[in-house]
Length: 293
Image 1 (cartoon, one colour):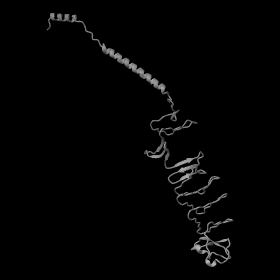
Image 2: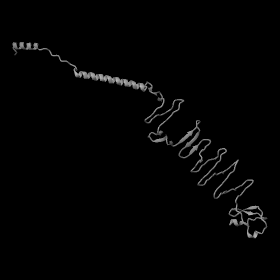
Image 3: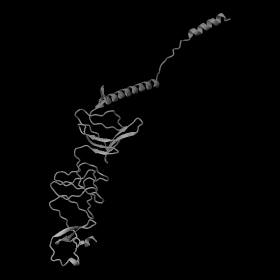
Image 4: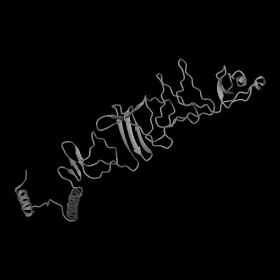
């Protein structure tokens, strides 16, 4: 047990000690660094806000869109010139009513049509080397819907009323040509030519060559053959001239038949060859048949 003196001494010691106060907060260099970082953060926020306002002002951001790009109910509306650095995917591209649509590229412009498996079906390429189209069918129609040109794997159809070839060398066909009518322009010549091979014209019901106001010439180097299998060959003209026919020579037995006239008769050999023989009082073909030998 504690005595009375010890209790009195303890009370005197406690009354002589002062209460201690502990300060809570940041002081000194820590406080100055904190103020500096807060000030720097405020400056960055103001710069960021100023740059954001400047970008919105320069890019012309509005509620309807950005710059010349407007967002409408039907899609995007773009005014002026635009440059696309990556592929453009769109369902429909059209110009402003009454204004043309220009597509320009420094290399080429390609339009590709693909299926669900991303396989190429139709391709349209325009570039520096030319215009290329790839597909199963190519058609050109007029404003009224009339077919003007069509091409596929099997045939090429020209639906215009007239096909005009303006080249100096004309039209060259490596295979056969089937047409109901071939006609030259008015006051122009029509020429069918095969420089190195033969020229063949076939028709089951007949071939008619008509020159209403000019001549018809058939010139060949070797032989000109007119053949009719079941019919006949008719030469209908006021005058028929057979130029450069060979002339048969009379035999020695008939040389004393008097002076020959300057009139000739046309003779035919058994092989169909024609020759001339000086006419006499009778036929002289038998006398001058040495051409048929």
